[in-house]
Each structure stands twice: as C-alpha cells, then as structure tokens.
Length: 156
Image 1 (spheres, one colour):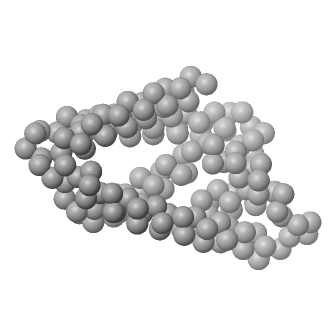
Image 2 (spheres, helix red, strand yellow; image 1 turned 30 degrees about the horizontal axis):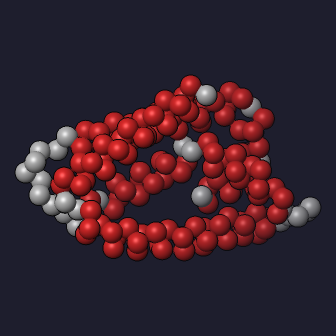
Image 3 (cartoon, one colour; image 1 turned 90 degrees about the horizontal axis):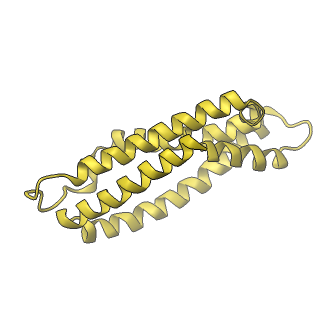
C-alpha cells in the first residue's frame, strides 16, 4: 500500500490512469497472478487424505507469505485506480517532500492496524479450520473463485 500511495503522490499512478497500455499490462499481470494463486489452491485441495491437520501458521513460511501479500497488492490494478482517484484530493498545492512521504506513512499505519486485526481473527479461526477435509473444501472453493476472477479480469 505504501508503494501505491507513494506512486499516487509522485504521479506514477496517474500515468497508469492515462496510459491504457500501462494499465493493461498491470491488469494482465494481476489476472495472471490471480490465476496462479487459484491454480495453486486447487492443487493444494488435492492433498492426500493423510494430511489430518495442517501445521501451525508460523510453519507456513513468513517470507513466502510476505512475498505473496506484496505480489497481491502491487499487481492489483484496482488498488492503483483507488489511489489515483483518492490520494490527489489530499495533496495540498505546493506540497513538500515531507507531505509526499507523510501521506503514505499514514496509509501504512491504518493498513497495518487493519491487517493486525485481520491476522488476529484468522489465527483464532485457523485452529477451527485446520482439519484436512475442511481445508480441501476451502482450497477448492477459493481456487475456483480466484481462477474465475482472474479469467474475468483478463477478459475485461
């Protein structure tokens, strides 16, 4: 989010709004990433029945999850459009470099607070949904949904 807000403040995201080629490239990269995530979820849904329980959340790989989250955010064209439409309204005439950095930092604080809340809820729910049978159903549903959305975005 920090990068998209910084892009909006510096005008990079305005380029995406005015250049159909640049926006199409970001949109197609985002669609490809959604399809990849959906296909991965579908493959995970085919796990063997021997997987009685998933390991703890920490064992899933912090760096891998951080990379996935970064990829999801940076390749999301709707995020770019949101910030192109919203952020310029809050930039005063004659804004300084401090203003250009302060606005993304505020967004980071708000988004971090939100994701800490979401993470707490998900961690609590993890124990309830960690059974292999439930997980396969969730992976199948999420995989189908992500592939469908990815194909829809690509065909837009």
